Image (cartoon, rainbow, N blue to C red):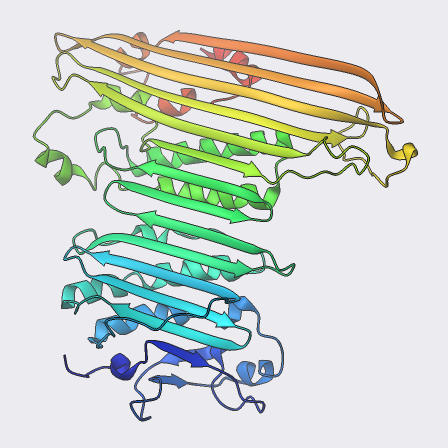
Length: 472
């Protein structure tokens, strides 16, 4: 391989330490480019802006420290730079770290790392083999997605921004793994792990507020809907997440990251984009009746669990916590279009415990004295399910049903001066059963394929189902 590009003399692990005067390299504006330095030095050119000079003597925020660096690393690949075949070992402990591992269709693995230890920056890039021109181009197109993922996690309030990394060129890229580890102001770490390949998408979130995970199965193409249908389904799910967070007093920051992860993972390739893939399967496809009753999303399971907290110092066992999980599963039986059945099921479960002032929604104030031991302790336990079933006989739709069930239970224990005065549990249940056949066979009633789906699939409370039953 010939050294023809700026990265040709890049050391496997390149470090930067600012000088006391602040007049040399500053990672705030580090730009990768052609270097006139000897081969033993990193091939990095740095341009100082007035903002960078002013910031040189001040602590550098993580969000600025990594600004544009990830994108520049990937963009350099399009120039044909020679990449080291391996890299040096990172320090055992770093303050922040972002890694991107890409496996190409040819089996080549490319690893990129950005990290820092105090004011010392570490840039690292390696490839298991030489990349083709097409592979370099495909990887460079991920530059903005990589930078977006970094910027989201590097901010003062970490966010999940993985949409750009889901737009991989599957012709040349086989899989992508992204890992972020960011140290918070209280020395706790917020982590994010993302994986995508031909058959699945997965993101895991971990931090002081709790854990969250979203898994999406993209191996099945048949029931994926249009972009409009997916967006409506995601919007409805996010509304449901907000309802759950309000009822169970879920942590807002954790739920925000969970919602962002759910949205990015479920914006999969749409039916129009996959038409060529479907045609290669040489089998029947779902018709408009089928798609009308489905969400348009790939099957998934997702969960968020808040870190338990003991807010009452006199009763540590009375923890405040929140957990919520939701899933979708679609089954298509019999590959004959004339004798087929389709079933899509959705489930959700919410469990939470929290304290409030007696008869109110606000949190009580605990200071360890008996006078502050007047409160309500709530235990929420809700579940919901929705099932759509279609059956064809001799090529005609013979049966189409919707069944939804929502169960809610709230236990409220009232304490006065720390002693239990009342313990009341309020259960409720609502069921909805509907024959969809008349609606599906009435073209004038349902002309659009997205209309029916978004009226029925949201898993709501008994009150929601009761109102919906009145509409039907």
